Amino acid sequence: MRAAADALVHFRRALELDPRHTPSMIEASAIHLGWGEGLEALRLARIASEREPRNVVPLVLAGLASSV
View (tube, rainbow, N blue to C red):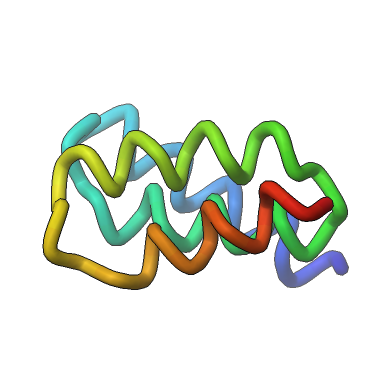
């Protein structure tokens, strides 16, 4: 869990520098999902999906987050 928390710090910083960096948003969503934080995971996955509508990863994350 500590490694995920450390990674999330970096993904958040990347998003501060470039709010449109979808890979960081997707990874942050996956971390929140792993922590059982479905609402935050879903929020991030939806934004990522809007930015990259042909990317299936945020759609999968949104589906999984909806069931948490």
